[in-house]
Length: 171
Image (cartoon, rainbow, N blue to C red):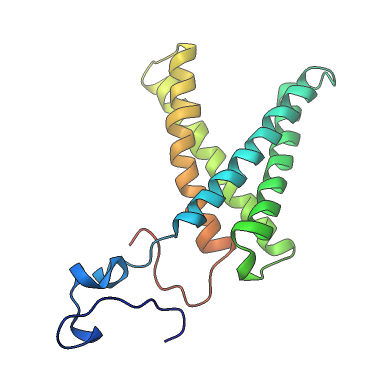
């Protein structure tokens, strides 16, 4: 088959190869993302985060915009950078272009932002952890980690689905 990798076999050929010899894809857990896909997604995400942070800082400082307007503008700019980086880099092989995938990407990123806000809300208002450190840990630490998993899954499955991919990377 095209696109399959050779795997060591036992006496009866590839069809009798067990999970221990056939590699991770033969275990029934579904395909897993390649390391380079995860790394490329992370690099693009870091670049988008840097754009978001730098623009927010400039809009709040020298431009003197209110915080919500500055954050909305920087969020859209960061999403645009992330979409362009993923479309032209990480997922360039999917050939999805145009407004529809960008809108889906924006929705996935907005959902990630909601996850971060929910983590902060629960920690600050429900659990009573009101210090700056607790807010940072819950919003920028735990919330960012959960949002990144959601963004990776959403980007990979909803925005840039690969042809022939069966199942989800989560198994």
